[in-house]
View 1 (tube, one colour):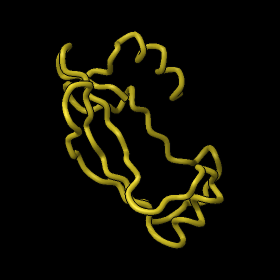
View 2 (cartoon, helix red, strand yellow; view 1 turned 180 degrees about the vertical axis):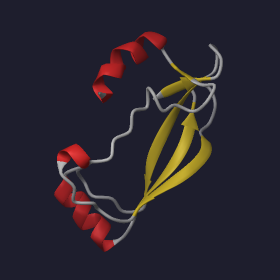
View 3 (cartoon, one colour; view 1 turned 45 degrees about the vertical axis):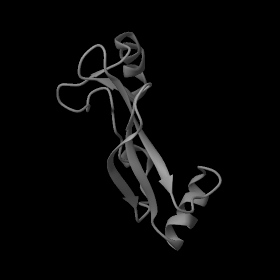
View 4 (cartoon, one colour; view 1 turned 180 degrees about the horizontal axis):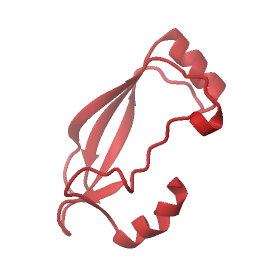
Length: 100
């Protein structure tokens, strides 16, 4: 997702896999991989002109078997960092329906 704190500085938040990951994103392969070892991701802020900036990490350690209507969801349009806007703004308007 591209974010900006001003109109000139747009950055993307990327999750970069660290270590061994399954070849696909199938739930069966992800479950098998997490059972063997946690899946780790490095978070980076990336711009068109600057090198990536480390921003954090995410580690997945378990799979929750829940019905579809109880699965956790994340809406990056509504839950964005304070003082940041999505860029381009028109795309945020189009994407908002995808997270409902």
